[in-house]
Length: 282
Image (cartoon, rainbow, N blue to C red; front, top):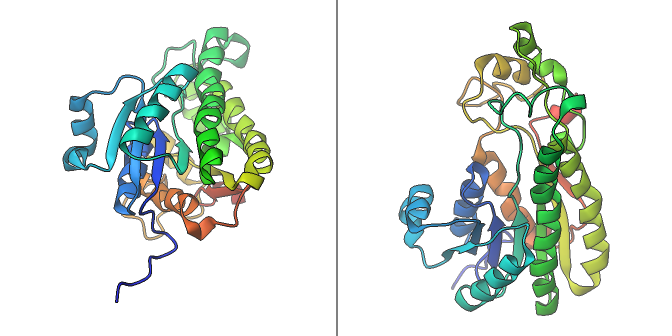
């Protein structure tokens, strides 16, 4: 007798992941494949070499497709939808993972005082993080609604819920740098919460669910002094972790993404699933 599929199985479902070449996008893509989904990765300039570098042996998986699309340009998303539907099937799910932020090693103008934050930087971040999510939901969400249902997960951030604690970066100012976590990323991620609730109400009657995934920081070789400061804000620090700091690993976010794409979350919409190590509990 064939065992019944688990509520977390994704067999027969096509999931679109924007920003699949990123640190989180790669981990989520591989997790979705393992759960049985076909995964369509969207990237502005994909190539076979990049796909092989990011996904290794999984690049040859017939359930993985990488498609060219710029989330800020609707026509490219529509072209990708056409190809995805032909090659992998009409999408059931969409994970809006693509985003811009100013990394710690950005030019001084990016991480300077709020009063001097460049207008062009604001426009660029908001274009990807807010407009890009809006357009992706328009194109792929409509396809889901027309096909009888689906699930959208918009990747938010703890910094869309609370302001960045500028004290985390005081060590940089103490050594003579002018450094403040900039505003655009926070504003763009905050916008996703009510946008997602709007979609949940609008598309609920058509069986399309929409939720946010709120993530905390992910380890990516950050400055040891930053890691020390950040870890003080995480209740789970050193609790069964293999590493000494308390930042998340990409793998910490794979299970929640699978959950929102699966039948295990079938009655969940307009909600926020927060995985932050307890950052917002303090």
